[in-house]
Image (tube, rainbow, N blue to C red; front, side, top):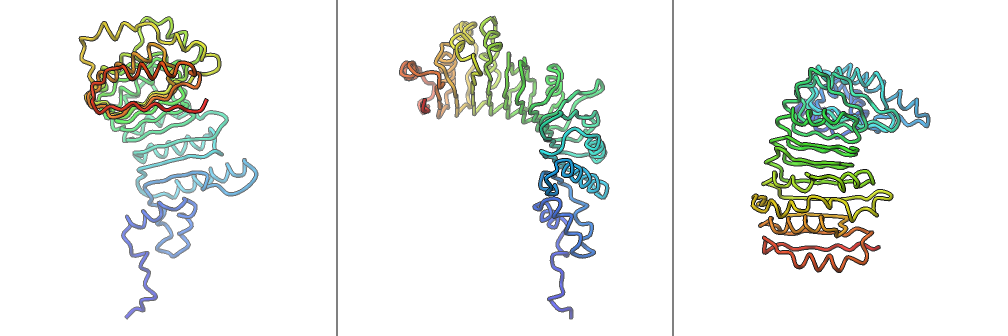
Length: 370
């Protein structure tokens, strides 16, 4: 009978459990398990979830040496990899635009990768190669600090459910086309976009996060949206645009989200624009009265969070609209702008006078130290 002390119980584990163990390790450590025994020599080579980060880097003071080490490690890893790759994540402060990355992405496009996450370091922005648009089975795509230019023959990501673009340079028309050509899209994040006029058409979208300098926002076909977060950076140019605009879809788009449950809004005034905050959005206030016959009831909205509220008329009208059209609202938290000092009491008086469609609705007024 074989001595129990000689049994290799770990090596006899099912491959799925071994992969789960290896997936918990930094990739360099996962590769190092090849020295354990002949059975473990290529266990790491069949990992389906591959996540490279700065832990994959060698510890040297010379940035060029570190970058070359990461490139060589990833290239060798992919060359020896055997089997499908479901998830590929690359997040490194050392790597920048490089032909090696283009080759890795070409390799992944032939592996039917399902999740692709790229976040490279500061410096020259990475220009995503056209082969990214050949990853037809993508369900998740997250890009940070890169240039994106869809080829003319791009027909969309038909399986994509999660899309996140942060600090991505892409023509405005291509953003809208990219969104509309992902019919299964459920989650969308767009961050750090400048002077963008955006129309979102995504019939299966449930979660939407927008951050940047938006001149116009319109939710054209988003009937399933349940959570919405909008952070607007109000520059002088954007403020002037709203001041002279005859129509502001930012006020109107809530009529197309009947299943909305959570709403978060932020307005950040950049240098100089705080003085113009009293006039931002002043036009089109008649919308609330002119369209009173339209059913804009938010039947599922339960939580609202608004920050940097200045108390100007268009903001108070918007708050009043939410309170009067949200029959299941539970809590609305409001944080006034730091620039608002003398008008906080008047804001509280107005808030207390607004009719509430929900008897359970509570208004939480959060006063931060000035």
